[in-house]
Length: 422
Image 1 (tube, rainbow, N blue to C red):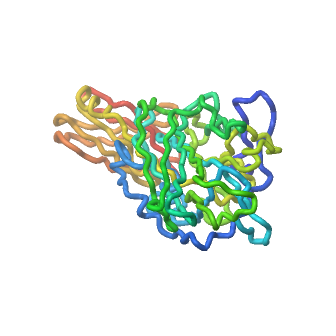
Image 2: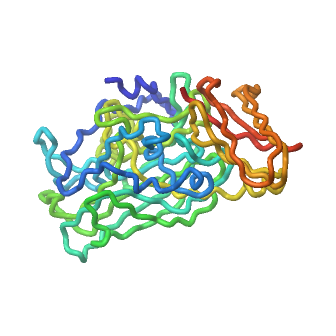
Image 3: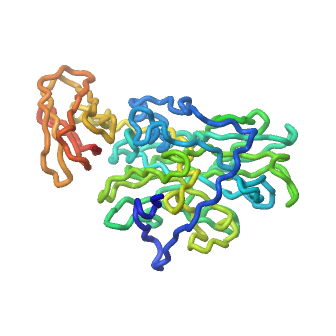
């Protein structure tokens, strides 16, 4: 079985001067499925936004896009499972497949979104954006009385260059870590943009995949910045070491093992492109929660990429409702044209570029490689004012990163990224 470090090389730490190799020799055992939770086979209800929605206002989730039946890199292969989120290890959960006692393994978990680097549709790297809402796909089993109120704490975490980690082996793709304060069982305050609470009652109980929504009120995020959401479950009941979770209330987050059970994940990034930041999920396991991790992870969340054996909870289904500020409207007013991100992106043989003209104009599409050399042009000719689409044939281009722009009359639009895969 090819391990992650063979596939994506080792991880080099930017933020630490030490040479510690923070890796995990083994992933936790997979839990026996809780018979009260229904198997998940269809997540189409959580793919409601269209490609057009995703450009200016829509829901983004890396895992769902990667597994998309039409555009994904591994369509239909993902194995969905419920991941228990619990703040302590005192409650007996059940049994592993080998019959040994299983305790809660994960105490906080979440997902980073890099909206400019999605598998086939995101926002422009040059555009600021707002996070309007967070959607969490979950299972929630209640065995206690209806008067018990449990709490979800959702921390929105912010972009930080100081916490970037870079893939080694000549690649420049980065992902961001999160600092964890074990003494207080909280994320480091400097990492947090805002904290929201959702109170779980009997009405939220669900043995199938359900979704709850958190409305956010945050400042506009700068162009190119990531944003993340971390989930903590705080039970509204007390317990002892002899308790079983089956007699209490428990919260589960739905997660994907991307390429099917017992496989390594797919990752999305453009080799050698320092702006190609990776989307990833991460968690606090028991060893970090209690400061006993022997592999250098104490004080940090552990990302998916660190597991060196197949890991069931690679990509959490946490969705982000992103709104792109109307910069295109300003461009339409100043240059007479508004250009959208090509779709799909990445693309293979063909891709579509939507644009809007303020006036009747001649239109020329230009495509550039990473050196700025023009590698393709498409003379669209005279077009009437209004909305149009260019269907660009990319079959003659090699796999890699490109940019494109439109020349309309005497004006040229800003360049936008396009990824070609083969």
